[in-house]
Length: 144
Image 1 (cartoon, rainbow, N blue to C red):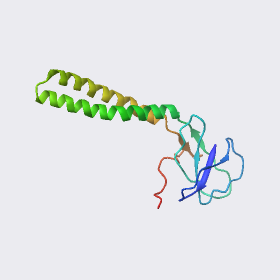
Image 2 (cartoon, one colour):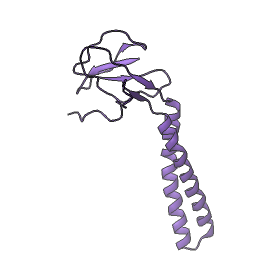
Image 3 (cartoon, rainbow, N blue to C red):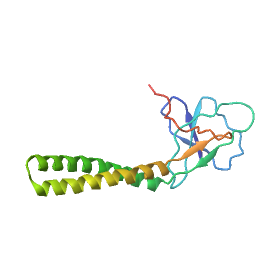
Image 4 (cartoon, one colour):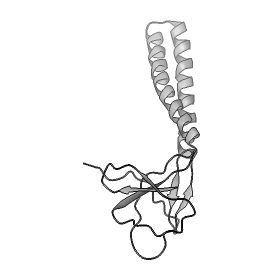
């Protein structure tokens, strides 16, 4: 589903056209995004107004994969830092259980971060134009 809203505002997104869309749309002053059930919404993008058709290709990312990746990252980073602290303190104070536990926590945190990155990347939605250029790769302009 293609959704539109006024560019530069905080308006709600409005469902405009289901794929494949053969309707004529007013895109001047608007930003768009692509959404679907179970798919990560695309980043907002703009379609330049003019005559002719705009061909968009969407490679939808899994919302559940992206969520799992974020969860893995949110757990892995603090666990890694806590493990690093416990490992360092155990080495400093010569406490073998802290060294072992800290090393395990540090390794587990690192593994969770390494798992998170491909999940987040594969869970993102890509939108390209007819020339194959990625058009939804940046965040929208800063809004005041």
